[in-house]
Image 1: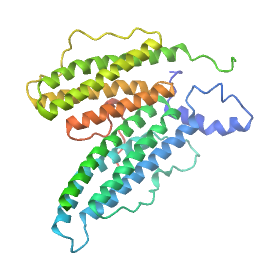
Image 2: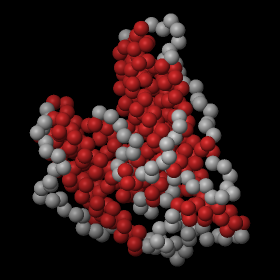
Image 3: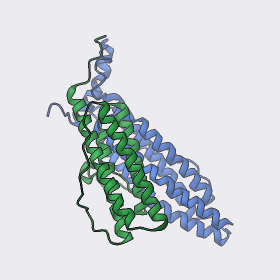
Image 4: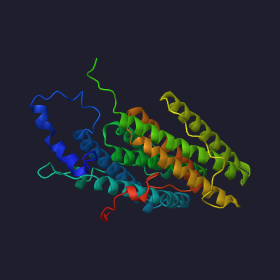
Length: 188
Length: 159
């Protein structure tokens, strides 16, 4: 038991870390191997924010695809329908990522409120289906890479979750590639 | 010189065990893809061959990593009990998905290790397995390699 502290214990240690630093403790080099609680919580929060942004991007693109502007040609409508069908399952996976990440965040009593309750501003997305898919594609690639960059600094179970989410995001790229290809063909 | 203690032997043993588990999964995948490829034709067979080669390369990499740690790599079994009967192309694709899911899970064992380079290597292999699995499955999943037991059941979220 003692060798495997619960998440709650680790986060309680995180709350105490600034005190140890303020008291002039310079054992950080020696204690490099055990989990480092403070970066762990900050990285979990940044992962949560990243997923919220991704969901906002998909919601924006799906909102445009479901309600294409008036007077659009029939081809554009078909492309928008194909885009919606491709994106909805991916959006559901991002929502599952977010729920799982949030479930790992246990906020110690008296800590600053979690940013997870505030939704980040939804970024603008291109309106054309092909451009929108390309916009999401580059966002997925960046998110997958950023998730891997968080791996070295978190405890084992969180690292596994981050690696799995990163892999899931990487698998969205070929799906979006297919959408880009299809919309390109439909436009011709 | 002695300010950096040598890694705990327990951590090194755990990493070796995780590497051996990943190698065992790769051995099974190399065997299984032989069956997958034999049941397919055309471009699907070409994909199976290319994935088969990827698993052979990964197997060789893991064997080299284990040897460099002074460990004897686990050997492949003579034959493996396949998790599904393969008579049709659809069953072949199902087997490929199962093989890739098992490989991804084994590499997540490396992601749990202390060494940063082992973690990154494991994560890249999880990604490679997830990409191959998605191609065979024809769809994506939210948590490649993570068994349901590793996921907490969060309360239902609105929106």
